[in-house]
Length: 457
Ligand code: NGQ
Ligand code: ZN
Image 1 (cartoon, rainbow, N blue to C red):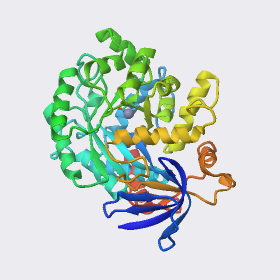
Image 2 (cartoon, helix red, strand yellow):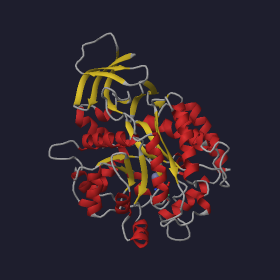
Image 3 (cartoon, rainbow, N blue to C red):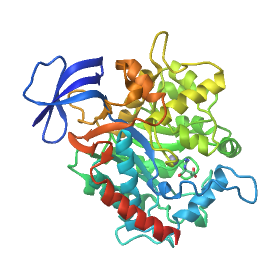
Image 4 (cartoon, rainbow, N blue to C red):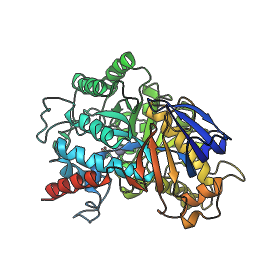
């Protein structure tokens, strides 16, 4: 048991001072008591926010940032980017993946993300044969999370087909493909490796309606219901217009509509992107209780389109944010671009503030904490009794924050660029970032650099 006093902290009921937090040996918040006059415990000065959950990550893609920013022979698109990505992942070994993921997670932590939902589909060896331990690659993700201290929702990906209507998978997808039994084997191995670790939860991720079919997903979800009826389910959907038209051609329905018709989509689900929805789909998704997993910097990078955030949030929809392909690793940039996208689309300002006289930064941050927490299958996203002791301390001496407090400070932090970031980060009560750097930053970066030299050779 450990106690600290937070000078200013954002709690579910708003900003409070002198908040005494009592942290259990397992890293949970046993008590959160504002207005304490205790002087015999460690006092953390400055402004403290709940750590942000990152609800969507493909760790391996961090190794290819910048390598698809050069025009190809034909018109570039999401689909040509995907070909570049398939080429890049052809060679990555388990050791290399682990080093890349560790560097990525250390950077996430120093940007203020305290947990990550890893949507992991790089399962097999380069030639497509399974590793002796089928979950080898996913286990390396678990190892990287453990080593850096970030909270993890491991989401092994179910990937079987290459397109709508059970189309065969392509050669570039050979490292991803499993049938139901093989996939459930991976899930079980990951679950076993993470059991009793309060920093880790395990869910499943059917890759997209393109990569599964109804029977396959029903089989997998029935087994998941048996072993963990609360486990989160994440899926990519309707990111590109081409997906919508292919889905319409295949079944006469749009992808989000198909998903909502065919499965019991509820608060356990997280629909990644859901960019292209008609008004009916926006309202149905908002009413389902599922989280929309938005990744604005990646969606911008890939030319996806803009999510209908104003209509969706007005209809009570829940969203969270993810750094996805990791063209940026900063929760502020995701939130800022979410709001900017709506400003550019609707020609207004403060569109996601949620009502008159409200702070846009605060509304965005609160909403993303809620959706991120919900989609993680863990008790995170709030400084609240029973939740994990995951929090970030902003840099108190940052000139740009001078004279600001509470919501105006949060607005300034969010809407002022990339500096300052955070000074300290705690996950499950353990300090993992100090003076703005991960406590093991040098060793992690050293291994990462060596791997990047190998991959570029
Ligand atoms: C992915 N990424 O699985 O990494 C996808 C692209 C696909 C994003 N959607 C591949 N951002 O959708 O087939
Ligand atoms: Zn993705």
